[in-house]
Length: 369
Image (cartoon, rainbow, N blue to C red):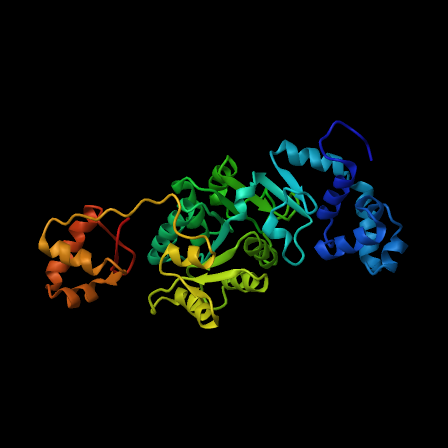
C-alpha cells in the first residue's frame, strides 16, 4: 500500500477496506482479525487460508479479486474530501453505549461530531405516516428531553423521525441521525437540508455503510440496532403492530435498554404498536418525567416552571382547568363543562388563536406550552 501524508494509520486503512467489501460484517471481521492478528494480515491472506477458517470459497475468491482493484488510501481521502470521518470500534471516542451491544459496527462513518455527553441519549422512533397527534406529542416530549440534556437519536425517516430531529434543532439540543444508506446518499432526499443542519455542530449523521450505498430495504433492520444501541432507551410514539419502530423497541429490550411507549386515541391504527409494547411491559409515557425517572436522571434540568395561562373569562378558565392534566376531545369538554357545543367550539377556536391551546388532531386539545 502506498504511504502518504494522511492522519490514519495503515492498520486502520485495512479496517476501512473490510468495511467496504460486501460480505464482511462485524462477526466475520472479528473472526478474521482474531485469527490473523490484524486487519492488514487478514487482508493479505491467501484465499485458501481464508477458506480454511470458514469464510467460504466463493467469498474468499471475491475478496481476492476486490482487493486487487481497491485502494483504501484513495477511498479514505475521498471520504475526508466530502467532509466525512470514521470511528473504529477499539477507539476511546467510539460511542460508549454502542460498544456494549452485540455485533457493533467495526467502522462507523460520521458526518458531524459525536461527543461524550451523547451517552445520555434517548431514541425516538415512530411511523412515517405521522398523525397530527403524533407530531404534537413528538414535538412536546422531544423539546422537554432536549431541555433536560438528552441527545435524541432517530433514523431521519419521514414522519416521527423527522419531527424528532427538527424539534431538537428548534430546542437548541443535540441529535444523532442513523442512516440505512451511506452518508453520501441521504434518504429520503427531502431531508438533505435537515442532515446538513444536524452535522453543522448540532450532532451527527452516521452510518455503518460505505460510500455509494443506496437505501436498500434490508439495510434498515440492521440500522435499527444502532439507533437503539446508541441510546439508554427507546421511545415509540406511533407505529403499527409490524412497524420498524417495534423492531427498534425489540432490539432495545434485547440490548438491556429501556422501552417507552406513548398512548394515543384508540381509533388511530398508529397506536396499536405502542399499546402492544405496553402490554409487554414497556413504560407508559404521559410526560417527560416518566422517562427521566425510569432512567434515574432525576427531575428536569434546564426547564423552567410552567407559567399559568391567564384566562379572559370564567368559561375560558373552566376549559383550561379541564385541560390541565391531559388532552381531551371537544365532546368530552362539552360534557364536563356543562357548556353548549357552540360555546365550547367558539371558546376553543379563540383560545387556539390566542396561542393558549393546541389542536393535536381530530379535535383533541391540549394546553400549549
